Image (cartoon, rainbow over all chains, first blue to last red; front, top):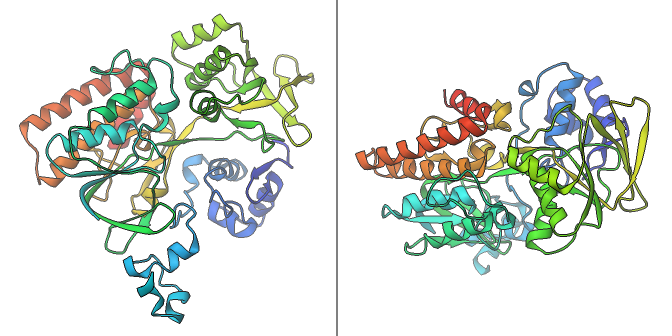
Length: 109
Length: 352
């Protein structure tokens, strides 16, 4: 694959960026993510997880089974922040700073 | 909201699981992100074969309709256009349709979230006009939109060759299927021969060097292992990528189900036992999420997971349910071990 090929389209991270992260000591998808932002865009690694893990395996001369899956976090799909944070009446995932600043807000929703 | 069995995914495996639960008198709710049930069967126009009775001879979308239809006599609850986004601390599911978050508590879950298509990467793969082969099928059969006039397919699985033929049937000029390895990956002889009848060539040992164009796909540059150093230009307006499929993992990560790598089942997938039960005892795995397989495998694992969910609810099994499960396992073995023996082997080793 050409070095300039994009592997994470959301964050426009190239093969070269991954190689550079690996040369700095990255060994897992999460390591590479923290150095490059790969997988942190809209698709949340749904498109790039496999190819980047394969690239890391190839660069580290490991097998695909040795590269663990990144931690996938809630919310699993994009949700408006208002829905996630201000929905306290029916129970929300996050006890957000918004809710703490205005404790009565939740009652009105 | 409350239910006994919450099924994530209203595709063939989720629908099959729902039938087994509902027909035994238990409450079941299906959540799906799409506005219609049926999952990926909705755009499949080919006759599904092999598939166990009573579904033989049906086309994909008809199979979906049949699976939906036979649930109508039971009080199944549906939550369409809703996505599972996470779990609350008490184990209930958070589901959102974009306006608010619904909390659904369930005695157990069947996760039937399916598989996603994997990409292939080459310079220019992010240009508009490059899409997965499954996306092209959604466009032609479901949305009735041409993905383009002249296209190229990269990859030669059964799914890719079948959809290539469907594109040809609706009048799209597919100039060829390129396969980087030295053999066609499709295993179904009927699919291969019906592609050959179209006259569309399969170019083995051929790779995409780059796709280029001004703001959209215009040219594909190919290189052939048979003619080293020679690169060929093709003028196309779309390119379909067949990179295989992999189980969708996000729900399992959230539900703390350990994952294991099985190449033949599509890479990483949740660990499960002979009851299709994850290490988290209230969570059953079904369909492509339990390993990438054929449509028959999807329906059968859904049905088996559904019966096991009933056993879970009733704190034990019953003779009738055991023999029913045995029939489904025998069918699954018969179909997978003849169609894709490596998938059956991997499934056995995965269940341990």
